[in-house]
Length: 372
Image 1 (tube, rainbow, N blue to C red):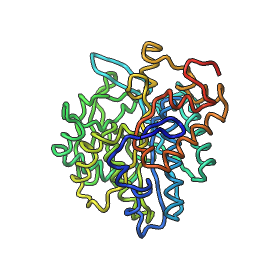
Image 2: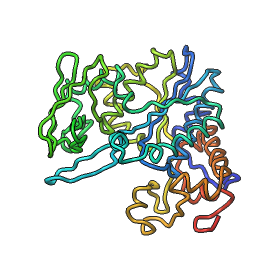
Image 3: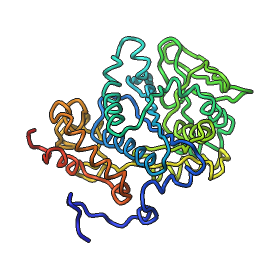
């Protein structure tokens, strides 16, 4: 085995042997459909770091590849999760949060601060790939009928879903927010979930304002609830399955590698079975490569913020899209795009991980620690 021109070796992987191109992953699901509809998501938690940048680029590159190979028009939907926690408070030993949307509405957080970097990256990748994209905020997402129908199913069958969605403590996190101060009980200690005819009733307690109730109708847009990642993941695949027929689409979810492997095997696949969806109606899930730090772990901006250079001796450019562009210009985006396009074009490249040093070397041949 010899390395390619970038010095990479490609170890044998099962899925790469199974496919000639990455389009083979969606080929069966695309038969008889008139379009490709790809969905991806990110929490609006600040400036995208290198891992997020490459995941979004790879999503556009894969979507363009699918559209080209299948001869179908393609659209990319970006679920902008403004329900991401932005404020954390501990009161009487319990954890409470307020989300990005609420802090923006209260004037405590700037909208551009949380979303401008993502929109800049999405628009750039769209122009480079020729794939149109649309943004779907969480406030809209949680109102969609298939999403709320899934919510009702989970609420009605909590004993069956709890081992998948909350295996550690059995508390499914479908969280309302206090109507006065917007605090949410993060760990759902005071939460009661009740499925009634045509609605889900959420009862909780605010440590400041006391008991409150949120009623979420299945067929309606009133009411609001926060769903944590496991619940939202199950709702998402239920939605994508419904959108196959709604849009006559090959419905594809493309996400970072966190949501593959054990997550898919222990959360998503069993939940799809519980929902009673036949295998032929499951949406296709594709996962992008993981960007690794120098210890072999996932590159983590939150760990860098917490531990600084003790965690990783990385320049700010690799942890903040604005800093990357300020330091290296749009040539950096083009270099990373070329790499993402290689991932989309070759199964051996898609189904593996890459170190932050490898990606840094693609940008004007720099090395971590060197000046721009």
